[in-house]
Length: 88
Image 1 (cartoon, rainbow, N blue to C red):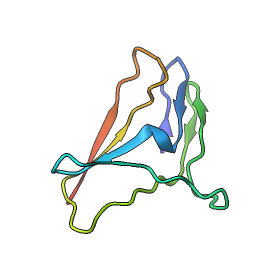
Image 2 (cartoon, one colour):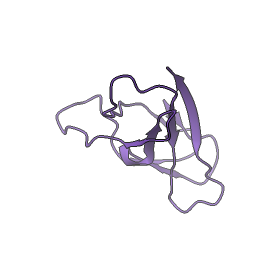
Image 3 (cartoon, one colour):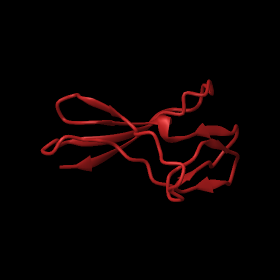
């Protein structure tokens, strides 16, 4: 679940997510299927809004030390990347 807790609005979509492994390799999110209702679509969140959806990556078997990053990149100076360690 992605939630905006303060102004301004934050743009989101699958392309705002990146995955990095412990060796430094980076993986972009896969292009979502238009038929999959669970896939995160793009949009903008204003204060108090939230959205939920699936973001998929193609990661080699055996990759470890995975870190998921959300990087809005919408020109909002206060928008900093959010990183979550996913473990091995």
